[in-house]
Amino acid sequence: MSDHDTLRLYSLREMRDMLLGASRVVLTTHMNPDGDALGSESALLRFLRDRGADCRVINCDPVPDNLTLLDEEGEFETWDPTRHTAVLGEADCVVALDFNQSARVGAMEQAMCASAARRLVIDHHQLPRPFADGYLSVTDASSTAEIVHDLIEDAGGELTREIALGLYVGIMTDTGSFRFDRTTPRVHRITARLLEAGVDPTAVYRRIYDEYPVGRTQLLGRVLAGIELHCAGRATIFHVTRRMLAETRTNLDDVENMVNYGLSIRDVELTALITEIDGGCKISFRSSGRVRVDELAGLFGGGGHRLAAGARVEGGEVEALRGQIAEVFCRALRDVSGGE
Image 1 (spheres, rainbow, N blue to C red):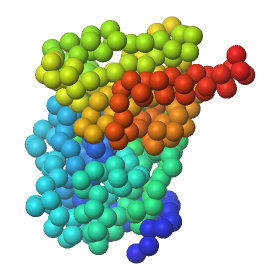
Image 2 (image 1 turned 180 degrees about the horizontal axis):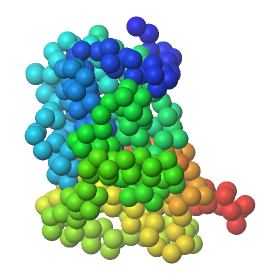
Image 3 (image 1 turned 120 degrees about the vertical axis):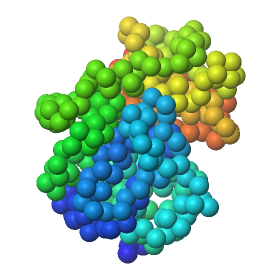
């Protein structure tokens, strides 16, 4: 085993061989799992089981209601140290999907890092930090699901409807329903094969985006009513408080994707949604193209992609963060505009 002080980057074939050589595998992903995280897990779980592996999914947080189509049988387990510490200890391999920093698994971190199992990372985010034995890091991929697709294809795996569903959900959600900049011709060719395998795009979209509870729509109305323009109308900042969640009987899962509304205003290039969480705030950043928000998120201890990033600020307060973000946004916009 490596001492995890440096990154060992694997090729697609090396990662494939590592996975196929394991008999007891645990898949896991980041806190507040999204469609790419859960879709990648769903597809890889079914592929490895088809190959005879004893494979389980154990996550620090449960599956959000709008993504339960990926876990109709209730197989995805939520971390319980009394039950799962031993499972991690007995595994041959622990696969981290859609994250590359150990802190992203929250309460699971200590047990995951203490396990003698080989730790592997499959991910498309930038700036990985050492904690695993091997990394398949493809930062120009549209999604982690795209990488999992390539692994399954390279291994000659059958593209069953269940596997295709997980891959489709991962790719569709992480490309913003095929509108973000990494929606390449290759992504559409992969998606065509997933549809041919039996995925119904209309039904999937409706399950994920069109079946919210009424409280979520009420929350959205309150959130958008508080949106503020900054930087001469080129940036927006808005927020979600714990009180809003309580009064609309919603939770953090219902906040997912609300940040994208901040870019729907004419001339806006940057947006941030600040969400109150226990012990601080979560910030979601989006950019229309000219400014890299992964670099801006880094100023708040976070990271992500060029046009979509996030950060968690322990002890952060909404009003203070709003002012800090506005200053960072205006400075970044001046820089790309040549000081205008």
